[in-house]
Every structure is written in C-alpha cells, then in structure tokens.
Amino acid sequence: MVQTRPQKVQKTDGSSEKVAILDAGAQYGKVIDRRVRELNVECDLLPLDVSPAKLAGYRALIISGGPQSVYDKNAPAYDDGIFELGKPVLGICYGMQLINHHFGGKVEKKPKREDGQ
Image (cartoon, rainbow, N blue to C red; front, side, top):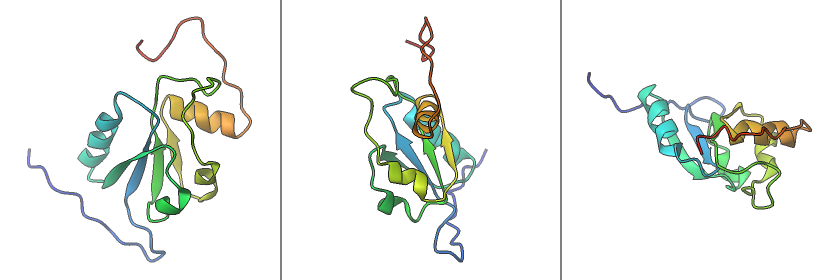
C-alpha cells in the first residue's frame, strides 16, 4: 500500500479541510490522529484548552477521550467558545461526555469504569 500525504484543500470561506483533534488526555490521541490521516485528512493534535481563535482555520473538531469524568474537580479545562465556532464537533469517550454536559445533558456514573482501566 502506498502512503500519500494529505493535500490541504483551501475552501472559499478561508477554512481548509483540516481537522483539529483536541486532546483531553487520551492514551490513544495519537491513534486518532493516525487514523484521520489514513483517511487522507490533514489534522493537528492540540490541547483541549486551546483558544477558539486558533481553531478558525479548521473545518471540524474532534474532542478525544480521557480518564476523567466531567464531574471530576480535576476535569480538563476547556474554553466553551469552541462550541460557538459553528464547526462540526465529534466527541469520543470523554469528548462526548463534555459535549453532553456543556449543552445541559446529564452524565451518569456507572458502577464499573468503561475506559479500559
């Protein structure tokens, strides 16, 4: 199989076909990055607390998983402006909890952890 480097496609609105992966502490953040690149989509792995202004040039966001719950006092910090950018957002594990919690949903604790711990 021949690996090709993703092409950066510039859109008319100034954004590109580039995806930002916001890392919430997942042990598999680099796996997400590699899988997205294998789909020939250019991406960058950034910290979850990145400024929304730095995300302007991205087409979409992926919020990775992590070991915390959104209710933990040490839950990863984020700028809620990321949800006001009008970009599609995919949450994986913790990322989905974060989206749900941010928009008023409830995250229930299970008796057994589900993150591979």
